[in-house]
Image (cartoon, rainbow, N blue to C red):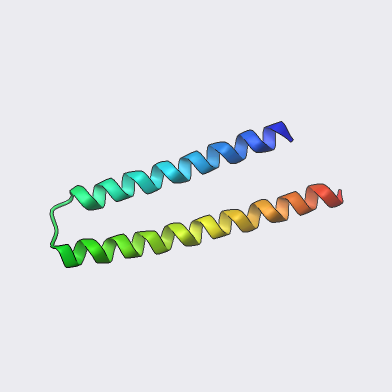
Length: 68
């Protein structure tokens, strides 16, 4: 159980790091306001999809561990 939490914390930290790096890259890259807003929306949508997929995997894993 402790190993699972440690692993989940590492994955969550990685996702947050990727999101922060992406956001900084987009905001600091020279582009028009319209292009920048479009990129931010696309990256936010992608991050939400990744977070939901991670949540589904963790729920399934927790259910499997509970049933086993």
